[in-house]
Length: 386
Image 1 (spheres, rainbow, N blue to C red):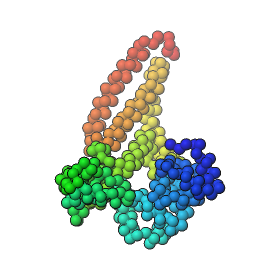
Image 2 (image 1 turned 180 degrees about the horizontal axis):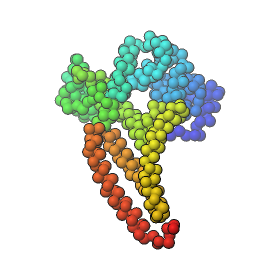
Image 3 (image 1 turned 120 degrees about the vertical axis):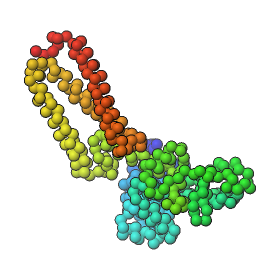
Image 4 (image 1 turned 120 degrees about the horizontal axis):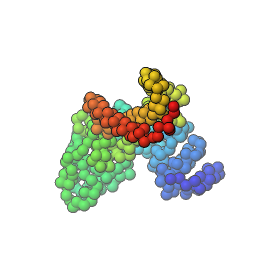
């Protein structure tokens, strides 16, 4: 969490263009904390600061910047500096950044990147949104099955600086078909000359590129994995999904569920970033539907107008009945929406849900009716209006 006492010092260093002071200032800071401090600066000031840092540190901080500030910084950077930044970014993050750039700008950046990087970015951009391929990274470590534990560790020692995670190493054949995985822990504990094939796990949990991203996130949590390999339809390893990637998916899906519970369609952008007209239309549509549905209440009350005239005390219980109906509906919506989100229900179960809720409604109605009867029975007669 950002220390507010550091913000004035940062502004002073930026105002004085104190390069040595800024380098010392960010030394030892976690990239997330550094990015939070930079959120208060103008895009041009952020560019001045990050240009003083080495490539990897610059890219790490850039990944944590607020999305709007990140886009503004990228827009103001010259092509060569932006290409250098993209080179050091994690594979999935740089693919997302290039997707948000205007076409004419990205066309100028691509020639400045190495051919392998260009192809990697375009491959990651080719997957449909919402699929596992769209959230995976191609930044992973592999080892051959016939290598020794010592050889595999030596290989990982050289690959580690360029890999997002090396805790899991994936075993592939010459055609990159996934054969299993081995953890770094098992490699370290194994005898130096023992072969990888003898310590690897053959029953590897994996996802397919066109699997739903939310389903993959649930699978990752179910098996309590740090990362999960992603394969194509020929079982060739094409990437991995890490816990931080699926965390974004879980947050996004949970946000959509909460919006639906509130009678608001899912918002593509945040609350303050959604245009006023779009937010108004989204809310007005559902409120209008609920408002029209509320006419049924007025119709029902009109049918009992003569009864209310004969027994005015019944009017006192109308708010209780209306509020109880609303609360009961909110409970049902919460339970069913959450069950759908967790995969416990599917649209095929609609009839079971319908009959279940009808029986539940009758049971709850009887229970609340009994409570209301007791309330009416225990209230003195002179407390009611004539």
